[in-house]
Image 1 (cartoon, helix red, strand yellow):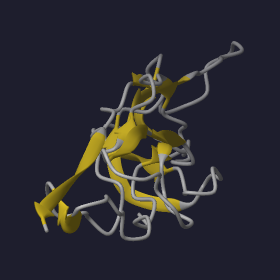
Image 2: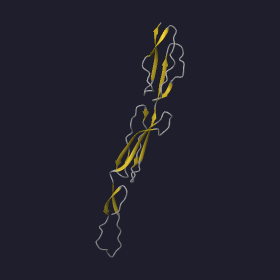
Image 3: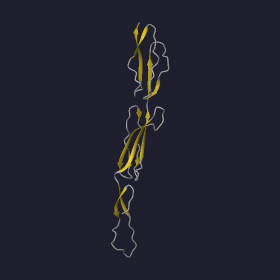
Image 4: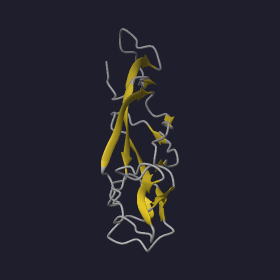
Length: 171
């Protein structure tokens, strides 16, 4: 019985006689693609420094029919833009690897105060998702005491534009 990676032997295209006839004969093997051929889908998220592959988010070990095209589902990750779906053929030897790369989104971070200009080294402008947020130095305003920001400042940039407004208590 012959073997062929990724396929099941179905037999010969012609009946094989028990004894050799007085004529030349040719037999061709027939095959059925296996339906459990493995392939891998890898999902990568972009690192804060812009490199790939940075964080392997997920690996999917899947199976399909040898020599058929597959279009694995693209995932959705908060704070990242999903790539377009890819279609690839499943290799008979199970070596097919499909890689999806997710781009880190940028969001706007704004600080608003009607007092003096903000000072210090702080995070502002267009910021990549999950970047560490550094607050400005405590703002000042003549005749007022800084009471905090209008909402708690998270440790890292969320997946949305944020504006933090200073609140004040009159002296």
